[in-house]
Image (tube, rainbow, N blue to C red; front, side, top):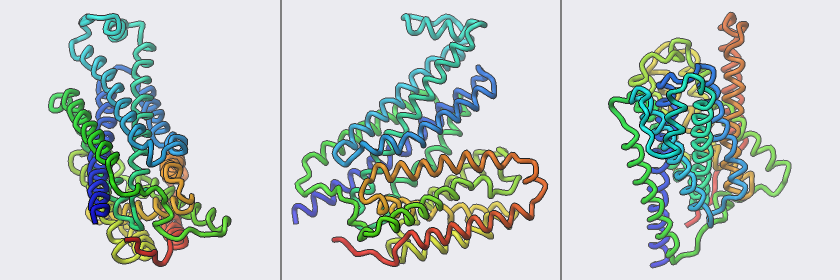
Length: 405
């Protein structure tokens, strides 16, 4: 009995710490990027490249970092990620403070002198770009490192359920949206508050890591408890590919949106509302999959998202489409991890890599002129994409899975 109580306490401690930290890390990264954009210190093209570089590192590196991340070193990797994000914020804070001071020489050390020269010299835009690039790179690597550690924990302690992964993943959606808002409003939210949030989540992670060390029950690190793994290797590859395809399609959310919803008009209402829909979909999806059926919930949610995302001009209806689409998040993560035979870090990285590839793919084709001229054709393609993803999800999940108590 003591062992079960101890294990349950550690499970809860880990989940709370990683979920809160997920919100804070994504908030901090979004805050940094949009605060730097608001300085208008570099060209739009350079700012866009920094966003691309950040996303490429934050989503693309996870599969590499995940290959080395296990339940034994997840804490070191996650806390290191938070530290890298904090270092990126330090650079952003110094540059921002120099610009806010109307380029006055605030240097009191060699590092600050260098930053002051970069900020005030008319011939040093390249140097400023290098500092901002460094901040973006550190934030991207830090974000990837934290996510992998948290993802490994959520999968390693799932015990045959989907809800835990859904809870952990969900908080990032709100973190990004609120970080964008805070980063774009320098008068209402300061760097000091972000540092305070990072310090708080670091303390949480350290405390949970210490609790986990004294856990009396055996640490669960073997993911195949979620469901009996497929024995046939070709089937494993097919199942994993189907799950990743669903994730690839989910990255096309902006592509499905009506034109009027794609325009950044009111981030405080529309943007935050859509982020809330994504948060609730991810959070609820895992619970629904556990209580009803992952296969039924995932496939039905994707089918219901078709009319809501594609054929509706109502923002409220579109919101429900976002909700339905995101209920599949924990289901596809679990299916991918099952297909990877317990390599949880690598599996988590594969899911983010699929998102990254989908984001670049749909961003590229969205700008094609012939697509804008054939709205009906686009709607048909979108329907086929979502229907095929529903079939893929149906094929990648089991009808049921054993309860592991």
